[in-house]
Length: 78
Image (cartoon, rainbow, N blue to C red; front, side):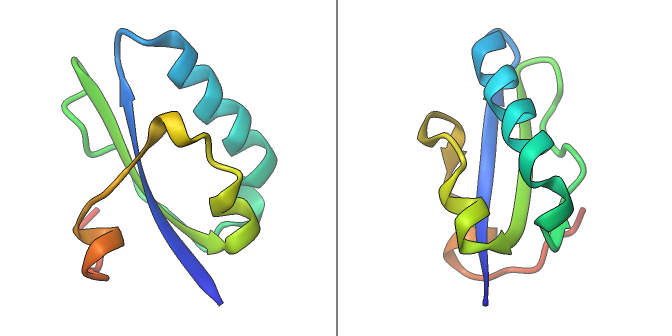
């Protein structure tokens, strides 16, 4: 069973970017979907993810957010 998450990284928070990159390095190959960055890039980076519960649970809580992707099961347009 796959699980979903959305990630929000502030452009002015290098610790958030490092947390996401560290997670991505470990889990990228096990994810079934990783969207392109659909944030503006100047202020925020946004990603939708889908994969095994273990990978989604391993995401740092400080970068997780909610979205139509996670709340309504809406397909990603990315």
